[in-house]
Length: 278
Ligand SMILES: [Zn+2]
View 1: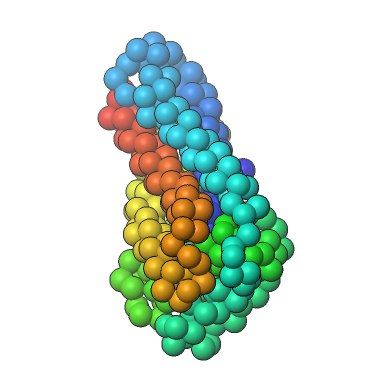
View 2: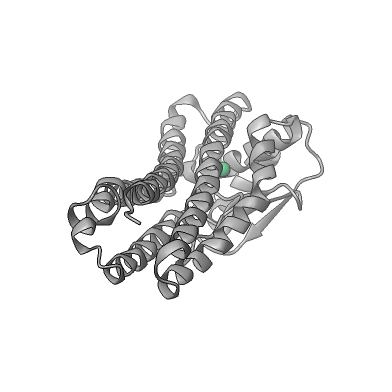
């Protein structure tokens, strides 16, 4: 139920839902904390934090994330049924995009699962799910070329990708610390200790929010490279690009939603911090 940082994958369909789990659990625990502190009135009516803060900051982003998720599912499900005229597979398209960029040391492998596609910069592997590896649909080609776009970013030393990779260790630490903060705020109630935990939670969310922010240019750029290459290499006709664009744009939206949900939860924790009366 805790946030997992899906490091390289596309479109991370469980990511945003997992991410929602943490705020909700945190909220429940924080509510418990508030009740224990006899802050009932402050919780409902006080400045920051509590129910009001939750409704203002967190609920809209839950709706946004679910909407983005449904958009990506419906776009993918629609265009995975539309075969491309050229009839080449996702794996072949990814290979062509990488070859064009002079990449010869990245292996294309097939992985299990639905939309588990990702580029692994450490292992130099481009992993495609079966549907996209073997498929010749507009959605499959879009996803495969997008992943190849990440490989090209890596090859040319795209700055945002470098920053994102550098942030991976600290982001992983934050996602591991968050559950401890949550459990801690459940058991260690009151006074200075809960403030320390709140500060720690805020710090974790600062890291996660920065990570989600730097993910945006990385994802947008990979999609832009994919669209350009699919046309210039003659893999798809420009009339076929509508399906690719709709699929990739919907996926981009899930990353925006993930960023907004991290940011809004950070603001929620900050308002709780500002509104505490101790
Ligand atoms: Zn991506």
